Amino acid sequence: MNSVTPQNSIYNGYDVPTTVAVFHSEKDNIPRSETGTLGDLFGDKHIVRDAKAGSACYSPTIYREGAKRGNAGVAWLTGIVLDYDHRSVEEVQKVYQWVSGYAAAMHSSFSDMSGGPTDRCARVFLPVSRWVTPEDGKLLWSEVVSRIGVPVDEHASDPARVWYLPSCPEARISTAFITYTAGPILDPDPLIAVARTSASLQKHTAKTAEGWRDLVAGGAEKGERHGAMVKLAAHLIAKGVDPYVVLDLVRAWNLAKCSPPKPDSEVVAIVNYLAGQELTRKLKGGRRG
Image (tube, rainbow, N blue to C red):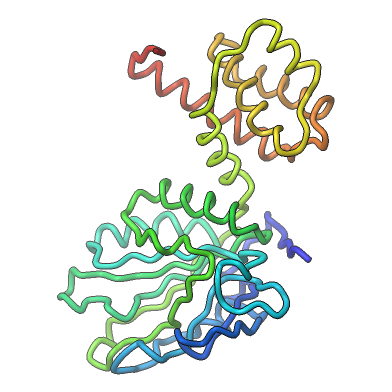
C-alpha cells in the first residue's frame, strides 16, 4: 500500500521516516526492504574505505514481492536521489540552498575533492510525502533537477539505480560531510503536475468552436484529464482571462466534468505554470507562431 506522510509537518532530516531497498554490494540483486529514518540509513559519519566497490548500497524503492533488482521489479519510489559529480563549490552550495527548503539528507560522495579542494562531489536523497510510480518518479526527478539548475548525473533517474552509502578514503575523512536539512517532506504532486503540463503543452493544438464545446460539456476520463485541463486553461489564459478566474473556472470544470476529479493541488499547479509561461512571453515581447 502506498505510504503517505503529513505534508505540512516540519521534520529534521535526520528523523524523516523512509523505506528503502538495501543491498550488500553493487553486485547483490536481492532487494531487502528496510524502514527507518534518514539518520538510520546514513548515520553521522562516513565509513573509511580504500575503494567504494563492494560496499553496502541502497535505492529509494519498494520492490514487488519476489522481484530481483531491476526496473521491471520496482513498484514504488519513496524518494529521489540527485548525484553531482565534479562540480564547483558554488554549484554544490546552490544545490544545498534549494534542498534546504525540505527535509532531506546531503552528503559528500566517495570522489569528493579527489581533484583538489574545488572538485566537489555530493549526493542528495529527497524523500517524498507519498510514494510515486517509477513513471511519475522520472517526471519528478526531471522537474527538481530543472529547478535546481545544476548539471546532474542523468543516470540518477533510473528507478533501480543503487547508491553507495557514505564512504571515503582515510585521506579525505576530515573533509567528508553528512548534513540533514529541516523542513516539510517534498510533496511530489505539484511538481509532477507541472512536468506533465510542460509535456502536454508541447502537444497543444487549436480546437474548433465545436471542439471546445465538446470538451467543456463532455469532460474527461482518467488518462485524458491532464491534457484536456492543460488545453482548456491554456486557451483561457491566452485569451487574456485573469489567472484567478481561470483557476476558479478550471476547478469547477474539474469537479463537475472530470471522472474522477484531479487533486486540487494539480489543478493549481497547472494554472500557475501556464500563467507563468504567459507572463514570461509577455515580458519578452514574444508572439505566438
